[in-house]
Image (tube, rainbow, N blue to C red):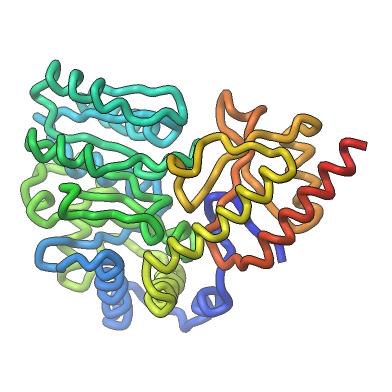
Length: 362
């Protein structure tokens, strides 16, 4: 079996993979309605969110679909968005705003940098008409985990709604929806939840959705339409039925394993093993452990190897790593700990890396 160390899609457990073989199902039948409702409830239970205040809105599409639905559905036409950029996915939020004609400003950082809180406050003081702030929680460009507590306090003090891209953190990193003042977060089935690509979702405060524009910007990605119909047991468009089966099974598996805290602890053990093992053979991490997520870490490439050479030699031994993006493409590689991966898999990975380096030094 190929061990996927890329940031999604992930290796599936047997039980999740087997869920794809369940009977074919029409999305207009009561059985699908029950499946969809169960998943929506399970998603809220991951972070103990009451359904009276929160809604999980399911979409067929990748994590980017959920990002786009969140921004376009919740920022009104008379609103103004602030986007925090410190990697590819923060910049993707800005692209979404540009394409849909949403008024926005950016707080831009070099990739991997910590959010400049003083700069943020200055920008907010200069733009007192900002209504929404969008930020990536885990920026997989570099593995940085953007800490949201202080950001949330600033937003609450100024009555700014906080929109969070939690695509690669939901289910394994802390997300304190209430105390951080999160209005909505977008996420995906095939990252920390260990589901199958094809389904994404937005967790949204019901009062924020009720106060959104009644005239949608998009047909397919309007959260209000989805939520209204899903609350009644329906769906506006055809959903990915088999992928829903897999997500329901993955969420049940997560609960049985101890929830997001247990998954975070498992990831932390694996990523610590990788960081320490790579350091022992001279491979340095891009960011300190305290600044990084437990989901993915980035490392400098060994001096003797290009990414393509390193990737291909690892793949020949059963491991798929991920390259850097943009200007980081020639200097780093990334290792994710998501999916049905065991400690023995990562121990073998470290052994293979060591053998590759020894071989290439010769």
